[in-house]
Image (cartoon, rainbow, N blue to C red):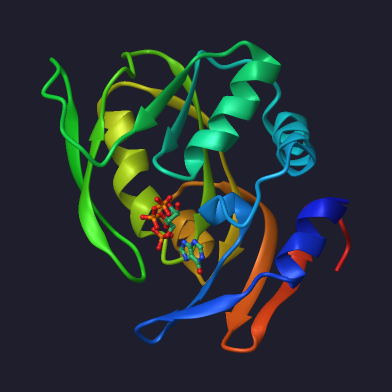
Length: 190
Ligand SMILES: O=P(O)(O)OC[C@H]1O[C@H](OP(=O)(O)OP(=O)(O)O)[C@H](O)[C@@H]1O
């Protein structure tokens, strides 16, 4: 399962962002090369998890964009991207986000009250991004049908579960300064 994703993670280079060992991967960084075969494998797996019964796909710039786009092309469901810049549109929701190595604001536009929403993203690490985003979507009146993140590292997914949000992840990895090791793969017995 998810062989292309697993193989690409095993060879992901590591750089240090302060003390944070950061893996560089096509899905999380768009470099060195984001291949359609990898996007297709992931989008198909996400559809296996979430089906297609939702009104909108929501993801976060920047690296949620390729995933949301691939899903949208396969499902015909529109996309709204949560941005890091303000637009000032009516109903815009502003929230603060922090990850293991950055802090900032996110701006939600285009999500309508009562819509069924699939949330997808490339990575969950501390959970800081989803911890801010999911309650904000609910406050806007969206009904979150599924939350799917491709790569899980750290305890972010567990923290979201403690908050009452089930986050499906495709692979769980461990990262240290020597590289990436795969701990769990969705749909495979460990
Ligand atoms: O679980 P967390 O600690 O919140 O980390 C996960 C977030 O980190 C990355 O976003 P980043 O802000 O690096 O933006 P990018 O997508 O542009 O790389 C990634 O795309 C997730 O949104």
